[in-house]
Length: 312
Image 1 (cartoon, rainbow, N blue to C red):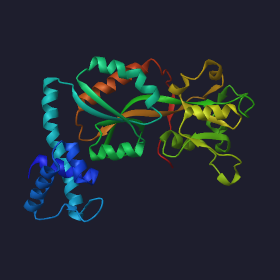
Image 2 (image 1 turned 120 degrees about the vertical axis):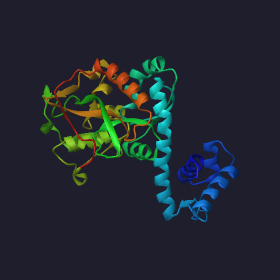
Image 3 (image 1 turned 120 degrees about the horizontal axis):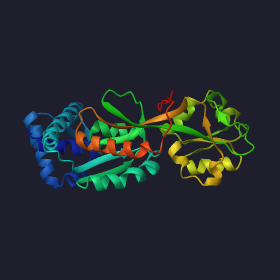
Image 4 (image 1 turned 90 degrees about the vertical axis):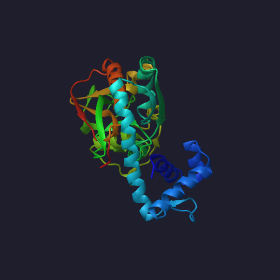
């Protein structure tokens, strides 16, 4: 049994296809198939059910894949230990970022990070929280930036910043005359929210005292874009909530319609998260310090209340 054979097994388990797995591991398909066959012969079991399309793991194969992932991760730690000892910060690093953070945070830190750590090859992917958690557990991401806490014992969380919720209240809305809002003012009946799958949506729903009753609504919209929500609010179709950093790119005229909340301000906690095995921790720490440094000057709120990103 070799580490290389285990890597081939993990590749087939992920892609459910020997040809695609061979392409991803940069070997020929016959070579990959032969090595997996040798491992199955050695163990005297079948890891994959080749009669299924796509290929499926057998019952024992699922257990082997779980253990193989642990073994490959531990093998990678040897390289990590050497890199840390040498003070080397470089190599490929796969980072996931949730959609409600990607457009505002990346422009703030990416150029600085690339200049400071030119030997790191960042591969950034926009993913929702569920996708991030799955890929982190399976070893397909090295770290991610997401709203926390997520309450997963396999994942470590290092807070980067606390981002307040800001209300966008158009003229003639029932709350337009208020200077400072309270969370009890919010009503899901006139709230425009992001579509299902966004943790910010769950945070807004958790914040509102009034649950949404679809049967009583004349109009309901869920969008994947904050910009769309703002435009529809301007048409008199309701109000919406945005993360603070998104408000910085709104035209000056529309910024007059933003309203803050009474302290402690409702906010979301944004963290860098990673597997508890702490692989590539030196790059994770470099990212954490870079991001925390650039955001510190942009968000000055102190007294906040963290709203859970997990749906209740």
